[in-house]
Image (cartoon, rainbow, N blue to C red; front, top):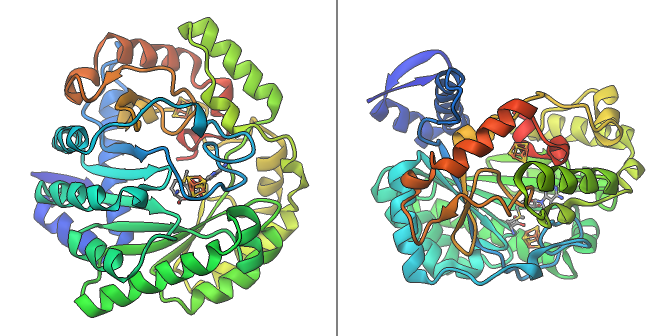
Length: 389
Ligand SMILES: C[S@@+](CC[C@H](N)C(=O)[O-])C[C@H]1O[C@@H](n2cnc3c(N)ncnc32)[C@H](O)[C@@H]1O
Ligand code: SF4
Ligand code: SF4
Protein backbone atom coordinates (compact mmCIF):
# COMPACT_ATOMS: atom_id res chain seq x y z
CA UNK A 1 0.00 0.00 0.00
CA UNK A 2 1.19 3.55 -0.72
CA UNK A 3 0.69 6.52 1.57
CA UNK A 4 0.78 10.22 0.73
CA UNK A 5 3.11 12.16 3.08
CA UNK A 6 3.66 15.88 2.59
CA UNK A 7 2.86 15.70 -1.14
CA UNK A 8 5.04 12.61 -1.74
CA UNK A 9 3.76 9.08 -2.28
CA UNK A 10 5.79 6.43 -0.45
CA UNK A 11 5.33 2.76 0.38
CA UNK A 12 3.98 1.69 3.78
CA UNK A 13 7.33 0.07 4.62
CA UNK A 14 9.23 3.27 3.79
CA UNK A 15 6.71 5.24 5.83
CA UNK A 16 7.24 2.95 8.83
CA UNK A 17 10.99 3.48 8.56
CA UNK A 18 10.47 7.24 8.57
CA UNK A 19 8.31 7.19 11.64
CA UNK A 20 10.64 4.85 13.50
CA UNK A 21 13.17 7.62 13.21
CA UNK A 22 11.14 10.72 13.80
CA UNK A 23 8.12 12.14 15.52
CA UNK A 24 7.58 14.62 12.72
CA UNK A 25 7.44 11.56 10.48
CA UNK A 26 4.68 10.09 12.62
CA UNK A 27 2.72 13.31 12.56
CA UNK A 28 3.37 13.78 8.85
CA UNK A 29 1.99 10.34 8.07
CA UNK A 30 -1.16 10.69 10.18
CA UNK A 31 -1.76 14.28 9.03
CA UNK A 32 -1.18 13.20 5.41
CA UNK A 33 -3.72 10.40 5.78
CA UNK A 34 -6.21 12.70 7.51
CA UNK A 35 -5.88 15.36 4.80
CA UNK A 36 -6.27 12.85 1.98
CA UNK A 37 -9.34 11.38 3.62
CA UNK A 38 -10.78 14.80 4.30
CA UNK A 39 -10.43 15.96 0.72
CA UNK A 40 -12.31 12.84 -0.40
CA UNK A 41 -14.79 13.21 2.47
CA UNK A 42 -15.52 16.76 1.47
CA UNK A 43 -17.34 15.50 -1.58
CA UNK A 44 -19.71 13.45 0.55
CA UNK A 45 -22.80 15.42 1.47
CA UNK A 46 -24.66 12.59 3.19
CA UNK A 47 -22.55 12.45 6.38
CA UNK A 48 -20.71 9.29 5.32
CA UNK A 49 -16.98 9.34 6.15
CA UNK A 50 -14.03 7.24 4.99
CA UNK A 51 -12.28 5.14 7.65
CA UNK A 52 -11.03 7.22 10.62
CA UNK A 53 -7.30 7.84 11.04
CA UNK A 54 -7.10 8.14 14.84
CA UNK A 55 -8.97 6.48 17.72
CA UNK A 56 -8.87 8.42 21.00
CA UNK A 57 -9.29 5.85 23.73
CA UNK A 58 -10.11 6.91 27.28
CA UNK A 59 -8.83 3.72 28.86
CA UNK A 60 -9.99 4.90 32.29
CA UNK A 61 -11.61 7.99 33.73
CA UNK A 62 -9.93 7.41 37.09
CA UNK A 63 -6.83 9.30 38.10
CA UNK A 64 -4.30 9.45 40.92
CA UNK A 65 -4.11 13.29 40.67
CA UNK A 66 -6.64 16.13 40.70
CA UNK A 67 -5.17 18.90 38.52
CA UNK A 68 -6.92 22.24 38.80
CA UNK A 69 -7.52 22.85 35.05
CA UNK A 70 -8.64 19.29 34.18
CA UNK A 71 -12.11 18.80 32.70
CA UNK A 72 -12.36 15.51 34.59
CA UNK A 73 -10.85 16.12 38.02
CA UNK A 74 -10.30 19.89 38.20
CA UNK A 75 -12.29 22.69 39.82
CA UNK A 76 -15.32 22.08 37.58
CA UNK A 77 -14.41 18.52 36.60
CA UNK A 78 -17.07 16.04 35.56
CA UNK A 79 -15.07 12.83 36.22
CA UNK A 80 -17.04 11.73 39.25
CA UNK A 81 -20.32 11.80 37.33
CA UNK A 82 -19.47 9.01 34.91
CA UNK A 83 -20.74 5.40 34.66
CA UNK A 84 -18.71 2.18 35.14
CA UNK A 85 -15.75 1.06 33.00
CA UNK A 86 -15.10 -1.87 30.65
CA UNK A 87 -13.49 -5.01 32.04
CA UNK A 88 -9.97 -6.01 30.84
CA UNK A 89 -11.52 -8.77 28.69
CA UNK A 90 -13.88 -6.27 27.06
CA UNK A 91 -10.98 -3.88 26.40
CA UNK A 92 -8.99 -6.58 24.62
CA UNK A 93 -11.90 -7.24 22.26
CA UNK A 94 -12.62 -3.54 21.73
CA UNK A 95 -8.99 -2.61 21.02
CA UNK A 96 -8.53 -5.58 18.66
CA UNK A 97 -11.53 -4.32 16.75
CA UNK A 98 -10.57 -0.62 16.86
CA UNK A 99 -7.00 -1.27 15.69
CA UNK A 100 -8.28 -3.17 12.66
CA UNK A 101 -10.12 -0.01 11.69
CA UNK A 102 -7.77 2.97 12.35
CA UNK A 103 -4.11 3.90 11.73
CA UNK A 104 -3.28 5.18 15.20
CA UNK A 105 -4.58 4.45 18.70
CA UNK A 106 -4.11 7.26 21.20
CA UNK A 107 -4.60 6.29 24.87
CA UNK A 108 -5.63 8.96 27.31
CA UNK A 109 -7.68 9.21 30.48
CA UNK A 110 -7.92 9.79 33.45
CA UNK A 111 -4.50 8.36 34.05
CA UNK A 112 -3.81 5.49 31.61
CA UNK A 113 -0.97 4.05 33.70
CA UNK A 114 -3.34 3.27 36.58
CA UNK A 115 -4.18 0.34 34.25
CA UNK A 116 -0.56 -0.35 33.35
CA UNK A 117 -0.65 -4.14 32.92
CA UNK A 118 -3.71 -4.01 30.69
CA UNK A 119 -2.21 -1.13 28.76
CA UNK A 120 1.02 -3.01 27.99
CA UNK A 121 -1.03 -5.97 26.75
CA UNK A 122 -3.13 -3.69 24.52
CA UNK A 123 -0.10 -1.85 23.07
CA UNK A 124 1.49 -5.19 22.14
CA UNK A 125 -1.68 -6.25 20.31
CA UNK A 126 -1.87 -2.90 18.49
CA UNK A 127 1.77 -3.14 17.43
CA UNK A 128 1.26 -6.71 16.20
CA UNK A 129 -1.21 -5.19 13.75
CA UNK A 130 1.45 -2.61 12.80
CA UNK A 131 -0.63 0.35 13.92
CA UNK A 132 0.79 3.46 15.61
CA UNK A 133 0.25 3.82 19.33
CA UNK A 134 0.58 6.79 21.63
CA UNK A 135 -0.10 7.49 25.34
CA UNK A 136 -0.45 10.69 27.33
CA UNK A 137 0.37 10.28 31.03
CA UNK A 138 1.11 12.34 34.11
CA UNK A 139 4.29 10.24 34.44
CA UNK A 140 4.00 9.76 38.21
CA UNK A 141 3.58 5.98 38.01
CA UNK A 142 6.61 5.22 35.82
CA UNK A 143 9.24 3.27 37.74
CA UNK A 144 12.07 1.18 36.25
CA UNK A 145 9.84 -1.84 35.51
CA UNK A 146 7.05 0.22 33.92
CA UNK A 147 9.60 2.16 31.83
CA UNK A 148 11.22 -1.01 30.48
CA UNK A 149 7.83 -2.56 29.71
CA UNK A 150 6.76 0.58 27.85
CA UNK A 151 9.93 0.56 25.75
CA UNK A 152 9.66 -3.17 25.04
CA UNK A 153 5.97 -2.90 24.16
CA UNK A 154 6.78 -1.08 20.90
CA UNK A 155 4.94 2.11 21.90
CA UNK A 156 5.59 4.92 19.38
CA UNK A 157 4.97 8.12 21.37
CA UNK A 158 4.85 8.79 25.11
CA UNK A 159 3.65 12.26 26.09
CA UNK A 160 4.35 13.22 29.70
CA UNK A 161 2.49 16.19 31.15
CA UNK A 162 4.50 18.65 33.20
CA UNK A 163 3.09 22.05 34.01
CA UNK A 164 5.85 24.11 35.63
CA UNK A 165 8.88 23.96 37.89
CA UNK A 166 8.43 22.16 41.20
CA UNK A 167 6.41 24.96 42.80
CA UNK A 168 4.23 25.66 39.74
CA UNK A 169 3.62 22.01 38.86
CA UNK A 170 2.76 21.00 42.44
CA UNK A 171 0.39 23.93 42.89
CA UNK A 172 -1.63 22.54 39.95
CA UNK A 173 -1.08 18.79 40.31
CA UNK A 174 -0.57 18.34 44.06
CA UNK A 175 2.39 18.24 46.42
CA UNK A 176 5.11 15.78 45.43
CA UNK A 177 3.81 15.31 41.86
CA UNK A 178 6.74 17.14 40.23
CA UNK A 179 9.46 14.89 41.65
CA UNK A 180 7.50 11.78 40.65
CA UNK A 181 7.00 13.05 37.10
CA UNK A 182 10.66 14.02 36.71
CA UNK A 183 11.63 10.59 38.00
CA UNK A 184 9.24 9.01 35.44
CA UNK A 185 10.88 10.95 32.60
CA UNK A 186 14.36 9.90 33.80
CA UNK A 187 13.29 6.25 34.00
CA UNK A 188 12.00 6.37 30.42
CA UNK A 189 15.18 7.95 29.05
CA UNK A 190 17.31 5.41 30.97
CA UNK A 191 15.21 2.44 29.82
CA UNK A 192 15.53 3.48 26.16
CA UNK A 193 19.31 3.73 26.57
CA UNK A 194 19.58 0.40 28.39
CA UNK A 195 17.48 -1.42 25.80
CA UNK A 196 19.10 0.47 22.91
CA UNK A 197 15.81 1.71 21.48
CA UNK A 198 15.04 5.11 19.95
CA UNK A 199 11.32 4.58 20.64
CA UNK A 200 9.02 5.62 22.16
CA UNK A 201 9.50 9.22 21.15
CA UNK A 202 9.31 11.11 24.47
CA UNK A 203 7.54 14.41 24.45
CA UNK A 204 6.64 16.65 27.38
CA UNK A 205 3.40 18.61 27.25
CA UNK A 206 2.93 21.73 29.34
CA UNK A 207 -0.55 23.19 29.63
CA UNK A 208 -0.29 26.95 30.07
CA UNK A 209 -2.34 28.52 32.84
CA UNK A 210 -2.15 31.52 35.10
CA UNK A 211 -0.80 29.57 38.09
CA UNK A 212 2.19 28.09 36.33
CA UNK A 213 2.98 30.82 33.76
CA UNK A 214 5.64 32.43 35.94
CA UNK A 215 7.43 29.12 36.53
CA UNK A 216 7.68 28.03 32.91
CA UNK A 217 11.03 29.63 32.08
CA UNK A 218 12.64 27.76 34.93
CA UNK A 219 10.94 24.54 33.70
CA UNK A 220 12.43 25.05 30.23
CA UNK A 221 15.96 25.00 31.69
CA UNK A 222 15.20 21.85 33.67
CA UNK A 223 13.73 20.05 30.66
CA UNK A 224 16.79 20.87 28.57
CA UNK A 225 18.87 18.64 30.85
CA UNK A 226 16.48 15.69 30.72
CA UNK A 227 17.18 14.52 27.19
CA UNK A 228 13.55 14.34 26.05
CA UNK A 229 12.89 14.32 22.30
CA UNK A 230 10.53 17.27 22.24
CA UNK A 231 8.75 19.78 24.48
CA UNK A 232 5.32 21.14 23.70
CA UNK A 233 3.51 24.10 25.19
CA UNK A 234 -0.23 23.66 24.99
CA UNK A 235 -2.74 26.46 25.31
CA UNK A 236 -5.54 25.72 27.79
CA UNK A 237 -8.92 24.55 26.55
CA UNK A 238 -11.53 26.54 28.44
CA UNK A 239 -14.88 28.22 27.98
CA UNK A 240 -16.47 31.23 29.70
CA UNK A 241 -19.70 30.24 31.54
CA UNK A 242 -21.88 32.05 29.00
CA UNK A 243 -20.49 29.83 26.20
CA UNK A 244 -20.98 26.71 28.31
CA UNK A 245 -24.63 27.68 28.65
CA UNK A 246 -25.16 28.46 24.99
CA UNK A 247 -23.45 25.17 24.03
CA UNK A 248 -25.82 23.27 26.32
CA UNK A 249 -28.82 25.07 24.82
CA UNK A 250 -27.66 24.34 21.28
CA UNK A 251 -27.05 20.65 22.00
CA UNK A 252 -30.56 20.37 23.43
CA UNK A 253 -32.05 22.19 20.47
CA UNK A 254 -30.19 20.30 17.71
CA UNK A 255 -29.72 16.83 19.17
CA UNK A 256 -32.14 16.75 22.11
CA UNK A 257 -29.32 15.91 24.57
CA UNK A 258 -28.46 17.33 28.01
CA UNK A 259 -24.78 18.16 27.59
CA UNK A 260 -23.14 17.99 31.03
CA UNK A 261 -19.57 17.20 29.96
CA UNK A 262 -18.93 20.71 28.65
CA UNK A 263 -19.19 22.09 32.23
CA UNK A 264 -15.71 20.63 32.86
CA UNK A 265 -14.18 23.41 30.70
CA UNK A 266 -15.90 26.36 32.44
CA UNK A 267 -13.40 29.07 33.38
CA UNK A 268 -14.09 32.80 33.62
CA UNK A 269 -10.66 33.95 34.73
CA UNK A 270 -8.50 33.17 31.70
CA UNK A 271 -7.95 36.85 30.91
CA UNK A 272 -5.73 36.94 34.03
CA UNK A 273 -3.00 35.21 32.03
CA UNK A 274 -0.38 37.68 30.82
CA UNK A 275 0.14 37.37 27.03
CA UNK A 276 3.55 39.07 27.35
CA UNK A 277 4.62 36.43 29.85
CA UNK A 278 3.49 33.65 27.55
CA UNK A 279 5.33 35.10 24.61
CA UNK A 280 8.51 35.40 26.62
CA UNK A 281 8.13 31.76 27.77
CA UNK A 282 7.69 30.66 24.14
CA UNK A 283 10.86 32.55 23.20
CA UNK A 284 12.84 30.93 26.02
CA UNK A 285 11.66 27.41 25.08
CA UNK A 286 12.38 28.10 21.44
CA UNK A 287 15.91 29.26 22.21
CA UNK A 288 16.97 26.60 24.64
CA UNK A 289 15.25 23.57 23.13
CA UNK A 290 17.05 24.08 19.87
CA UNK A 291 14.25 23.15 17.48
CA UNK A 292 12.85 20.39 19.70
CA UNK A 293 9.88 22.54 20.60
CA UNK A 294 6.29 23.06 19.46
CA UNK A 295 3.29 25.12 20.53
CA UNK A 296 -0.26 23.79 20.19
CA UNK A 297 -2.16 25.45 18.66
CA UNK A 298 0.73 27.20 16.94
CA UNK A 299 0.12 30.76 18.19
CA UNK A 300 3.28 32.80 18.82
CA UNK A 301 2.53 36.43 17.93
CA UNK A 302 1.63 38.67 20.87
CA UNK A 303 -1.58 39.98 19.27
CA UNK A 304 -2.77 36.42 18.59
CA UNK A 305 -1.90 35.24 22.09
CA UNK A 306 -4.07 38.08 23.46
CA UNK A 307 -6.91 37.08 21.15
CA UNK A 308 -6.73 33.42 22.18
CA UNK A 309 -7.71 34.37 25.74
CA UNK A 310 -10.13 37.21 25.03
CA UNK A 311 -11.71 36.71 21.58
CA UNK A 312 -13.54 33.39 21.46
CA UNK A 313 -14.18 33.82 17.72
CA UNK A 314 -10.44 33.70 17.08
CA UNK A 315 -9.54 30.30 15.62
CA UNK A 316 -7.68 28.56 12.81
CA UNK A 317 -10.80 27.42 11.03
CA UNK A 318 -14.53 27.96 11.12
CA UNK A 319 -15.64 24.44 10.28
CA UNK A 320 -14.66 21.37 12.27
CA UNK A 321 -13.80 18.18 10.39
CA UNK A 322 -12.61 16.03 13.27
CA UNK A 323 -15.72 13.78 13.28
CA UNK A 324 -14.74 12.75 9.74
CA UNK A 325 -11.30 11.49 10.81
CA UNK A 326 -11.36 10.65 14.55
CA UNK A 327 -13.34 8.25 16.64
CA UNK A 328 -13.45 8.32 20.45
CA UNK A 329 -14.08 5.42 22.81
CA UNK A 330 -14.82 6.31 26.42
CA UNK A 331 -14.03 4.23 29.52
CA UNK A 332 -17.55 2.73 29.55
CA UNK A 333 -17.26 1.73 25.87
CA UNK A 334 -19.48 4.49 24.52
CA UNK A 335 -18.41 5.79 21.12
CA UNK A 336 -18.40 9.54 20.33
CA UNK A 337 -17.35 11.52 17.26
CA UNK A 338 -15.83 14.38 19.32
CA UNK A 339 -12.85 13.90 21.63
CA UNK A 340 -12.79 14.54 25.38
CA UNK A 341 -15.93 16.00 27.01
CA UNK A 342 -17.35 18.54 24.56
CA UNK A 343 -20.34 16.41 23.55
CA UNK A 344 -19.89 13.06 25.33
CA UNK A 345 -23.67 12.57 25.51
CA UNK A 346 -23.93 12.19 21.71
CA UNK A 347 -23.34 8.44 21.61
CA UNK A 348 -23.31 6.59 18.28
CA UNK A 349 -23.20 3.20 20.03
CA UNK A 350 -21.18 0.99 22.40
CA UNK A 351 -17.91 -0.61 21.27
CA UNK A 352 -18.40 -3.67 23.49
CA UNK A 353 -21.70 -4.38 21.72
CA UNK A 354 -21.14 -3.39 18.09
CA UNK A 355 -18.02 -3.35 15.91
CA UNK A 356 -16.78 0.22 15.40
CA UNK A 357 -16.91 -0.11 11.60
CA UNK A 358 -20.65 -0.72 11.95
CA UNK A 359 -21.03 2.37 14.16
CA UNK A 360 -18.81 4.78 12.19
CA UNK A 361 -21.35 5.55 9.46
CA UNK A 362 -24.56 4.55 11.20
CA UNK A 363 -27.63 6.79 11.17
CA UNK A 364 -26.60 8.72 14.30
CA UNK A 365 -23.06 9.31 13.06
CA UNK A 366 -24.26 10.57 9.68
CA UNK A 367 -26.88 12.80 11.31
CA UNK A 368 -24.21 14.36 13.55
CA UNK A 369 -21.86 15.09 10.63
CA UNK A 370 -24.67 16.59 8.56
CA UNK A 371 -25.67 18.96 11.40
CA UNK A 372 -22.02 19.87 11.90
CA UNK A 373 -21.61 20.55 8.17
CA UNK A 374 -24.63 22.85 8.37
CA UNK A 375 -23.41 24.84 11.41
CA UNK A 376 -19.62 24.60 10.84
CA UNK A 377 -19.08 24.37 14.59
CA UNK A 378 -21.03 24.64 17.86
CA UNK A 379 -20.60 27.23 20.66
CA UNK A 380 -18.41 24.97 22.81
CA UNK A 381 -16.07 24.28 19.88
CA UNK A 382 -14.47 27.70 20.41
CA UNK A 383 -11.63 26.22 22.47
CA UNK A 384 -11.68 22.58 21.35
CA UNK A 385 -8.61 21.18 19.58
CA UNK A 386 -10.94 20.10 16.74
CA UNK A 387 -10.74 23.66 15.38
CA UNK A 388 -6.99 24.04 15.86
CA UNK A 389 -5.61 22.04 12.96
C1 LIG B 1 -6.81 14.75 30.59
S1 LIG B 1 -5.09 14.41 30.58
C2 LIG B 1 -5.08 12.63 30.57
C3 LIG B 1 -3.70 12.04 30.57
C4 LIG B 1 -2.90 12.17 31.86
N1 LIG B 1 -3.66 12.00 33.02
C5 LIG B 1 -2.12 13.48 31.90
O1 LIG B 1 -2.36 14.31 32.76
O2 LIG B 1 -1.26 13.62 31.02
C6 LIG B 1 -4.60 14.73 28.89
C7 LIG B 1 -3.86 16.04 28.70
O3 LIG B 1 -4.78 17.11 28.82
C8 LIG B 1 -4.15 18.17 29.48
N2 LIG B 1 -5.19 19.04 30.04
C9 LIG B 1 -5.93 18.88 31.15
N3 LIG B 1 -6.79 19.88 31.30
C10 LIG B 1 -6.61 20.72 30.25
C11 LIG B 1 -7.22 21.92 29.80
N4 LIG B 1 -8.21 22.50 30.48
N5 LIG B 1 -6.76 22.47 28.66
C12 LIG B 1 -5.78 21.90 27.93
N6 LIG B 1 -5.18 20.74 28.28
C13 LIG B 1 -5.59 20.17 29.43
C14 LIG B 1 -3.29 17.49 30.50
O4 LIG B 1 -2.26 18.33 30.99
C15 LIG B 1 -2.75 16.34 29.69
O5 LIG B 1 -1.58 16.72 29.00
S1 SF4 C 1 -3.35 13.78 35.77
FE1 SF4 C 1 -4.40 14.09 33.81
S2 SF4 C 1 -6.44 13.16 34.05
FE2 SF4 C 1 -5.51 13.32 36.08
S3 SF4 C 1 -6.37 15.19 36.89
FE3 SF4 C 1 -4.40 15.68 35.94
S4 SF4 C 1 -4.84 16.27 33.81
FE4 SF4 C 1 -6.65 15.24 34.68
S1 SF4 D 1 -14.58 21.41 17.52
FE1 SF4 D 1 -16.68 20.86 18.13
S2 SF4 D 1 -17.41 19.47 16.55
FE2 SF4 D 1 -15.18 19.58 16.40
S3 SF4 D 1 -14.40 17.90 17.62
FE3 SF4 D 1 -14.48 19.68 18.94
S4 SF4 D 1 -16.49 19.59 19.93
FE4 SF4 D 1 -16.56 18.23 18.16
